[in-house]
Image (cartoon, rainbow, N blue to C red; front, side, top):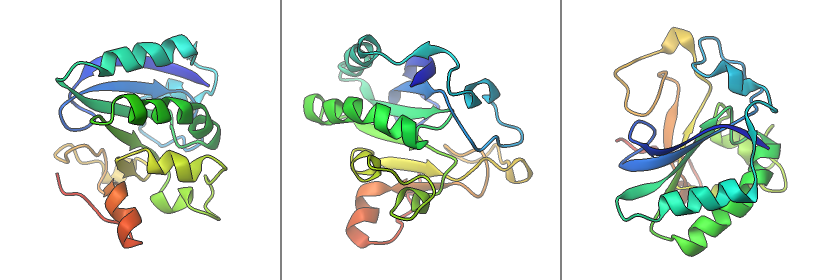
Length: 172
C-alpha cells in the first residue's frame, strides 16, 4: 500500500484532535473529489513499518482522540488488508483511541457478498469505531454538514451497528 499524506494534528476529519492518514488507491473516481491524485494506488510513499511506528507515536499524547483513515479509500480491499496490522496494534496498545474511516463504499459493501468485502473486512470493521460512508456526490454537496461532504453520506456507529444488526447513524 502507498499513502499520500500523514497529518499528526487535524480537527476536520472527526471529533477532537486527530492523526489523519490519507491512503492511496480509490476506484470510485467521484466527480468533484478534493483528492484526485490519491486515486492512483501507487501515489505517494510506501506504507512501511516505520510509518506505522510514526502513527503510533503520534497517537500517544492524551490530547489526541484517535486516528482517521481517508484517502483515496481505506476500504479498498487491498488497503483493508494493509491497514489491519496497524489497527490491531492501535486497539491493543492505545485502547482509548478511536478510529474513523471515510469510504466511498457503503457499509453494506464491506459485508459478505458486498463488492468491497474481502478476508480482512470483518476484522477491519471491528477495529473501526465510526464510518463515514458513501461516495461524494457533487450534486449533493453541502458545506454545512459536519464531517460529510455530500448529503448522501452517513456517519455510522460501527459498534452499535454490529450489536443491533442494522445501521446505526450517529448525529454529531
